[in-house]
Length: 438
Image 1 (cartoon, rainbow, N blue to C red):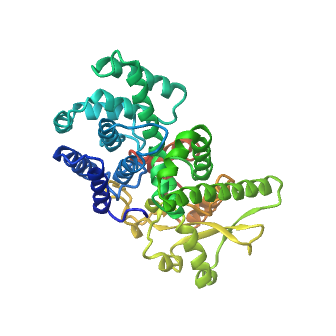
Image 2 (cartoon, one colour):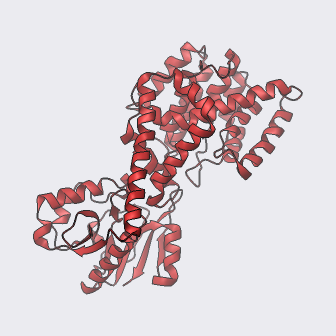
Image 3 (tube, helix red, strand yellow):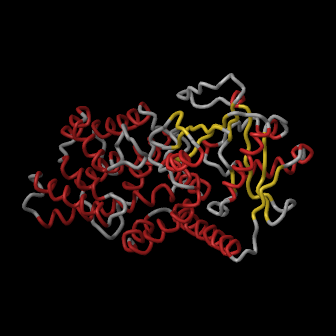
């Protein structure tokens, strides 16, 4: 089965699985609908550009029911109830301040929500066991994060009449949590092709305020850990999924590894000085060339969706003489284009409505769109060279200020160097709007 087209289709597939698994009581359907409503009302629906949106919550719920017949752990009907509830609520952190849900925040939220409390009581479910399952999805399951989770798990076991003096059942619950943690990490990548996987990786990077150079490297490390450290459970879960889902997962793993090899090769060539990055100011004649525009557009489309400004007017903006464009070329000024910087008068842009820029309308500010680079070339300083060239061009066009978006820690580093100032800060993304004086 391919990726779900809508939240409605995801809901229907989960309902089918619920019927097959004996979760037919109204309280389970109400839990599902309540989760969807709450995520969407908090702006964490399908349009939220972060990895931990309603899609992820529903995908994990679906796959946890779908893969339950794996041979590593035998689940009872009672276990299935707990897996369903824990999967549905495992990232239930609607008031998140950062995209990655903090398991403690999730536990706090599900413990205090009155509607959930009523539904869980109706289902005759022990909330302490649900908490243990959610805490076991803590990632990475190592170091201080694991230690803190284990302290809370111990307390939950102590609080529950079902687990308090039952070491065998405690062990079984921990194994259920292990299963859920592996499903949590596999599901999104099994339910779609590589383009979906890359979009998820970019969403994760954007929402966690990672630099783009970390996207592929982190994805490879993530899959290697899953396949090397969680081999037994990963193998069993994948074995019971459809052939298409297994293919999706392994195609994604192999594709990320291939891209990582290309990145390392590029970095090696750069280190050996076999490869030069040349920032280039492009003439209006070149900017009229359809091939040039298409090349830039292809690189532009690699950016995370929230960073694609003026998408509908892209060609028009490239041809606009008021817009500054420079490119990054390989080895010389006629070499292959591997990136570009672009921007124009602030008044040309409809930015996020929370932004109140005092200079808007004064025609004294140029807006620099997010730098666009081909995958593999991030982290080699080409972006910052294009940015400096852009600032010089802005100065020659008599602009007083430059504004743009950047990661919060990057802006902080520019406060001393460039007298940068925050204009508007955004959470959970920490991708903020700032200004410098030119």
